[in-house]
Length: 70
Picture 1 (cartoon, rainbow, N blue to C red):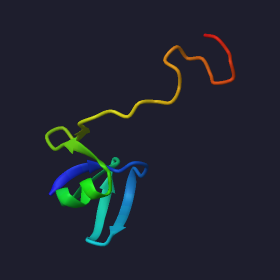
Picture 2 (tube, helix red, strand yellow; picture 1 turned 180 degrees about the vertical axis):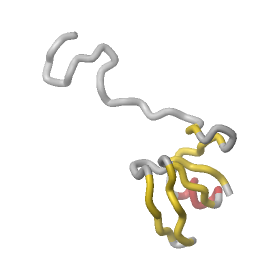
Picture 3 (tube, rainbow, N blue to C red; picture 1 turned 90 degrees about the vertical axis):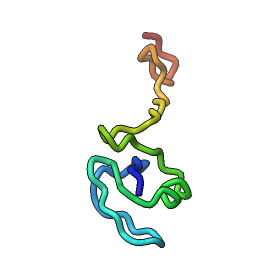
């Protein structure tokens, strides 16, 4: 069983063909093959943080997509 970050839920229960699993702080412990098959990002089990980070769609300089400049 591995720890995975759910793509959009932070708490609740996710139901899969392999069973139901509790989501806490956006993390869910599921069998490795299930988490990988669903495309969820693996999380480091020691400190429960994602092993990779998602990139924001917002520009790094704080400008919006309406042509404004920071």
